[in-house]
Length: 113
Image 1 (cartoon, helix red, strand yellow):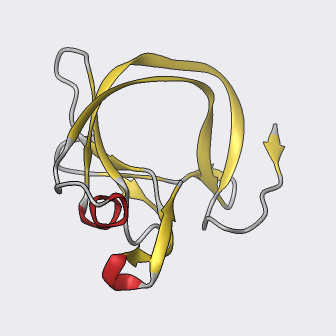
Image 2 (spheres, rainbow, N blue to C red):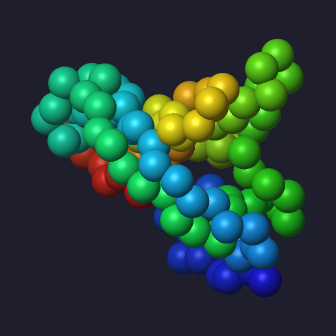
């Protein structure tokens, strides 16, 4: 099941039968840190709970690092907002989120999504 988006992000969101759930740690990457006026690398504990995934042209938008098998970002996202690592044995950190409308205070403003 796929839902039409308004075009702010360079990908769509598709509903899946698979639940993604768990606690994670998110660290701010440069563009989001600048926008929020917080130190780069500020860490937050968070929770993910969703039945959706980012897709591009009907395929998963996640770029997989061939060396590690972990996430390496999303196709079409130039400035990820966070580096996220799930609280699970062997979990790898991966860039997530997106900055829209610029890269922070010196990049014309922006919003984290």
